[in-house]
Image (tube, rainbow, N blue to C red; front, side, top):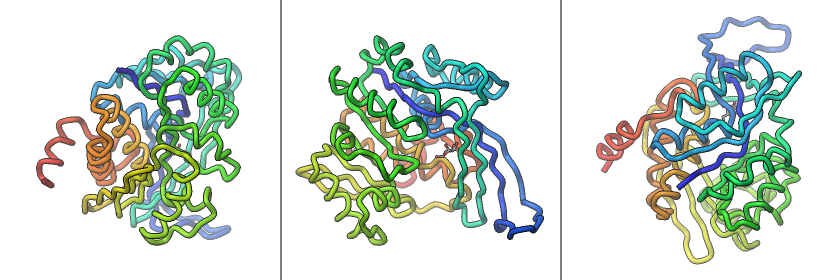
Length: 306
Ligand code: RIB
């Protein structure tokens, strides 16, 4: 039972603010935290919270950030045999601003993540073939994403694609080759060019994608909940009501937790419910990976809400 995450890693530089400074203005921020992030690494770390057998295929720079990123992944129990160091490149970093309403604005400087190539997928291919699920996002080159989808299809390995950050030129033909396509509502809106302000509009846009042949469309809608659509089901899981202080990485926590429960149970609805609770806890804490709960914390939260 193995999950592979083929994707990015970053160091998050999170500044907590009242508001963004205006042009030419200097403003004191409330606080600053530095931590491990990157959508790929976040998802791998979330899955590892359940002692899932997780491997990562990723690229760091030849700097201290890269060394520490690999150390962190190892400490989380993630296999890093295919997390390689790119010479003469900086590791990825993400300056992030979180406002008082817990919402975030993120810049990414991909650094070495840009060098994760098809050759790296070939190098990891024997291990990837042993996986029950490959999870991907879009912080690496699209060419590598498409190559991995083709590789997975050829070897009958299910793929979960989280199209974040959204790339409007993402090829729909490749989306259709994925077993799970999991955008948030704004990514869904951009990709379908449709309105997604209400749950009904989100449903319409999700059906548009599902009708193209995607097996399962899972749309995360933040504090509203999660919508799951396939060709014979439409299901909505409501989000838990919590006091959010920092939503950074919540979507990633959802994907990683979902991946673990799906691989171990094959029960999509149960996995969505667990992942919804996992993400709800994460927004009540500061930071990205540092906000992810343990298995025990998840179980007691779920009990409290049932
Ligand atoms: O989804 C949150 C993540 O996006 C952050 O950890 C940041 O690194 C960017 O990749």
